[in-house]
Length: 130
Image (cartoon, rainbow, N blue to C red):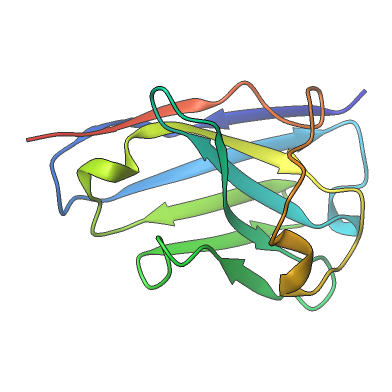
């Protein structure tokens, strides 16, 4: 059974950094694209970033481009999201999700349908506040 477990969230001041991790199990991790989404208080789920399998192509929402970095370690079945230069508007619960394809172009994430559990983890809270 697919299992995704996020960790690494916390409370930081604006300008701070965090590194989120997602431990994957129950499927061939290296064969699938993976995604991070987030949900801010009172808002819907928002696509943040994705990484393809194979060539490792990465994509970012405009709101996080240049500040966040997605990466994966296929040997450890781990997905990561490095969050730098955090802003108060980055406050949200962050989820990792398993996509249903190996690779996709950037356009595939324009109207991204967020997978439901268990293809999405339970989330980790990131709070950015002074």
